[in-house]
Length: 227
Image (cartoon, rainbow, N blue to C red; front, side):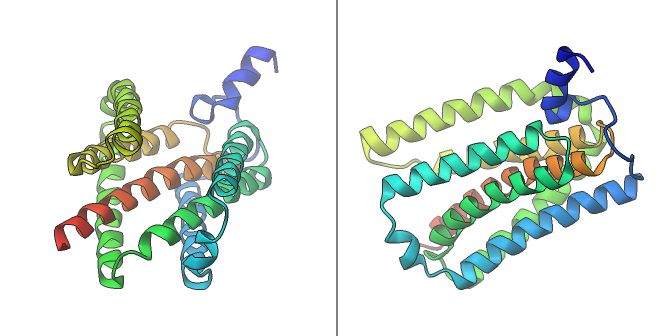
């Protein structure tokens, strides 16, 4: 394989070469579902067993450096690796730091509210997966707009937090719509690459990040409405 093809293969959703055994559609989707469930179970265990005070006691700069280092390394591993095992390791390097954030956030809300946010997130995710399967071309067309909107939202939120010292509730709704689009987009792309175990793990990792971001924003919206 030449350098050009290697570079293409490093982008999960641009892969065209088959590396490893091709799975049936059912086995491929089952593998993605199993990897997603593993991530959610790890996060659930972390919330149940790691006191939020322990996380709060870590130096904020140490926490941030560790969080981003682990996430970036994890993303690099599952994007660049052709081994399902290495990709799964990278996936876990993303799941664990996300779990610490989830732990801190859900500690602020009642259990009933968290469960409601999980139910809504699950329903929305399934709906967007169906739409992503039905209209993949549409989601490909809006991909650039989703990325631009997400970058703009991040900039606005940073200005709000560090300069204006306030929050706009409408931002949460915008982020929800953005990640709804990403779920449909990533699901559609996941089903248009070679259906190997490694690609199933990589696709699940991308979907995991979409779903967790969606869940956290829905939880914030519900929490704000209860006040």
